[in-house]
Amino acid sequence: MDHLKELDRHFSEHRKAHLAELNDFLSIPSISSLSGHKEDMKKAAEWLAGSLESAGLENISIDETAGHPVVYADWLHAEGQPTLLIYGHYDVQPVDPLELWDSAPFEPEVRDNKLYARGASDDKGQVFMHVKAVEALFKTNGKLPVNVKFCIEGEEEIGSPNLPAYVEDNKDKLAADVIVISDTGMQGPGQPAVCYGLRGLAGVQIDVKGAKGDLHSGLYGGGVQNAIHALVELLASFRDKEGTITVDGFYDDVRPATEEEREEYRKLSFDEEALKKELGVSELFGETGYSHLERTWTRPTLEINGVFGGFSGEGIKTVLPAEAGAKITCRLVPDQDPDDIVQKLRSHIEKNKPAGVTVDITEFDKGKPFLTPYDHPAIQAAGTSYERVYNVPTAYTRGGGSIPIVAAFDEILGLPVVLMGFGLSSENFHAPNEHFHLENFDKGLRVIGDYYFEVSSALSGAE
Image (cartoon, rainbow, N blue to C red; front, top):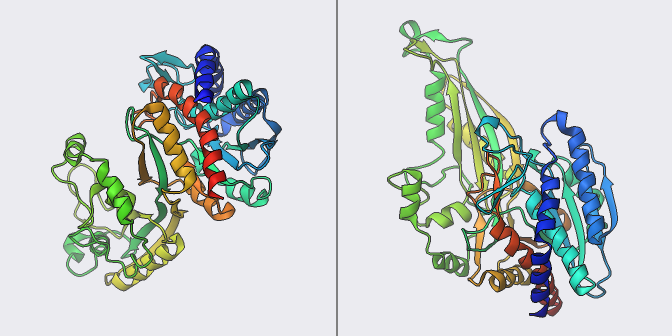
């Protein structure tokens, strides 16, 4: 295709300059969770706004929130064509432990065709690719084949606490036909994937309290409830030996994967034996009747994340603990609701509470699941563009994790969401030595540029 040849020429000629610009962006320590970097957050937002302006975007604004600002820009002159809302984030994770980095986290360095820096893959590098793809289309095509809006926030790494309110307050400003997010990964090296669904999340802490204080096990053992025994009994009641969750009504609203989806997963030929070896386990475990991919993508879970209480120091202490607790998270699938699941957990705990203790429940993170049908034209268009550049079939996957803001976008704006990422699971995002494979940077620029043409055709034809 002529436009892809022009994009290839442009990106090849400007690669050195583009990497230099990206290095400037990555050099800003925009750590949203640390108050000492508030000015750096502002600097990163301003840098991004300037980059969007240089690329040819219009109506650029740095919109204040109760926390860090949102950067907005648009170009809306493709009459009769669909509008894409491009979401990403310019904030990054802290860098600790610093001593484990092989190069300074905010001094970008290329080694073995990998760009090392905090934010290289998550998510500055991928946001930058969309900016440069738009710029390239202006320079090679004179205009964009679609309308675009950019909404780039500065709080994703702290859970996007202020973005839902921003989206709610700016529904008209953010109105679009599809949301495109490049903050996810590929199936593997050279194996592109479009993620069309994510699980939701519901987290709680259970606190069990028995006597008013720890008791001597010789004087009171066998006569007073042990808080840890009570907690263990309660935790054991959540799941049976087949991996099935035994909370009443837990599965009531689960939307099963379609047979077409299950067939797509089988085509991936996922190597469970290789996974066992990688993880160092003798067997995989999960809900009976489902493959590993189905268990981690399409089925809900209830996992105990931590248990605490009693004496855990060196030696032994003959004590009956008065208090014990556990942290639990549930990964949820369409059409489960986090508030409903938490209420079902409360009912289960009350029903199964052992004698002699009180139980308190504290609610934590919540996020709704998200799913765009994988045969949606915008999803399939992404797959076509990946295949055109990578020359291999695109995998259509769900993610086992949760990105709460994706579900919020889906719920507030009511739009399909296309997750087309270019990262790899081995790139150490959130860890020391985060990096981005420049092969995927190079190919990804071309995929994104092509996608704007492909999705224009796909959505126009679908109307």
